[in-house]
Image (cartoon, rainbow, N blue to C red):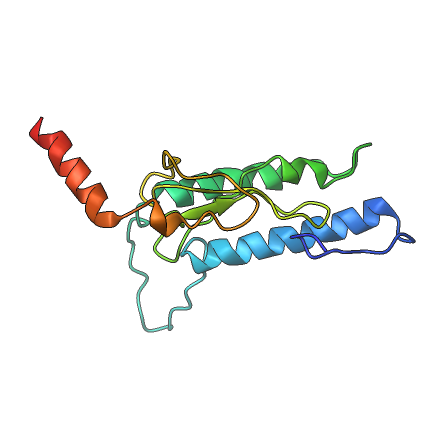
Length: 159
């Protein structure tokens, strides 16, 4: 079973199955996006005036996710290679509830195999030097320490 949840049987037509999987995938990504605070609808009471507020600033992870969602929404489904092949080439960032990158980022699972995982700085999404890229848990907590990060930033400012 792959990340997109299809699993499907050999008797199904690949295009219909692929379109259904893409729809399910889009729905899951949209739900994650909604939970992170973008696009949710707020229901105001009739007596409560609408308050015009600027939208909250988007974090780098949220901005990257926005770009990937935009690319997915403009994908043309039917082609010879199948509609989902393009999804496997995309990196979909894994953001936490505050909009920061999760320490562990992974490619999608494919053909029952886990995707490769690597460790990133939660603020920037940049690869943490020295951390492995493996099919499994790279134990990112061993390679990233917030206190070291703060000291590194402080020492860079002092120079």
